[in-house]
Length: 147
Image (cartoon, rainbow, N blue to C red):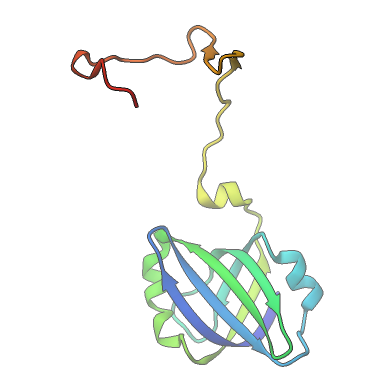
């Protein structure tokens, strides 16, 4: 488990997720190798002293410049109750803990795997789909409309 003192720079909500941004001040980054290995994966994160508890997040990126290191995380939209408890901490110094999660990105976002559809593309650009893989229902009112 990694524990860092950070500036909780911002928390921003978009339609499907919350974006959390933390800054680690200074030119020395504790646990730099471990953080680089975690980036791009799912982690368990906790903002200590908040009532949000631990939650899963996608460790979206780590960026370094001469004054700070920026850590960005995406949290799924289904964690609203936990995220509301973090808003009072935004803009202030905080202590966070990070640890790797066993979840993959696909498992975290709940994306279902599918086998896809087999097809052939003809020289004229039309597509042939094997029988029984897909069906079209034609509405007679919309028969002349192309989509």
